[in-house]
Length: 345
Ligand SMILES: [Zn+2]
Image 1 (spheres, rainbow, N blue to C red):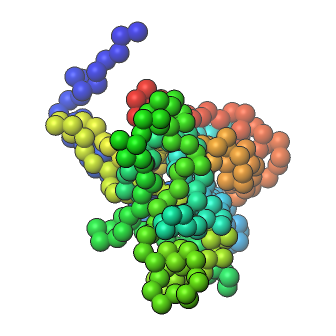
Image 2: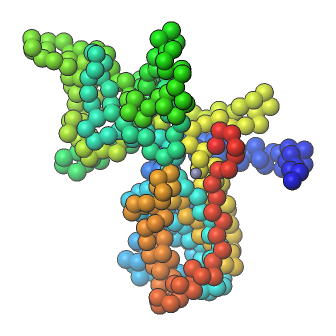
Image 3: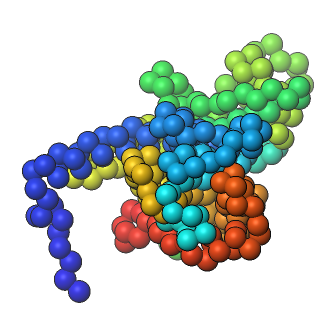
């Protein structure tokens, strides 16, 4: 199959439009490194475009009519938007679907340890990561910590110019003879992906106190963030590459940045959804979590969140019957999109 190079076919006008979209996309991508951040940003943008929270509509007993817009989120990590069309919903919806989680490293629940006078956070990889790509690059920590009293502390460390960053270290080249003989799959093993977070011991430690570097980190977390070591148990901290996306190439024809699987589809689906006007068929956009690990869990597509929300939206239009929910689903069309580029997906 011969494939056109689209750059040869764009008009000047189209190229300008593309550039505007790319600038908007990059800005959103930089604010969406995690599924939580992407869903929070998407909700803020949806509200600006007149979308109402479905929970409020249910509470207030509102009846939805053509042109109305609602969104439903679950656990702040998955989102569905609905734009009611002029045709009955039972004739089917036009659905856009993409995922907002990206490959990353998760901080484990009891992560902090010291080894040879260096403090580390133990991690587990999430999704399809090529492990050797994660060493010796600046890394940031994004997420939330839920403290004992229930308060949620948002955490983003490693993105501001004067923030520290973190790293996973790799062997010196001269010591790597054996390592370089290994297959790429095991050259950096999953268990080796631990985040180096400090090398400075606490001062005025007890004479026989061991693990003084670890103690420094514990003390620092308490002082800087009022976080106790046990709070890691109720934290969700994700390690991602630090820094913003950049234009790539002399011609700036590419975007280099973390998390484009699948924000390149999710954010563009969102833009399209927000720009739609007066649809005939009800429009829907699903931004799903947990695709990287098999769509499982309460916020993945294997859960009943989406079907539940379709039932709720249908009920809000005054059509409350289980068989009609099945009809909506049966008559719907869906564009489910994910990255398919052979290189650097
Ligand atoms: Zn994907």
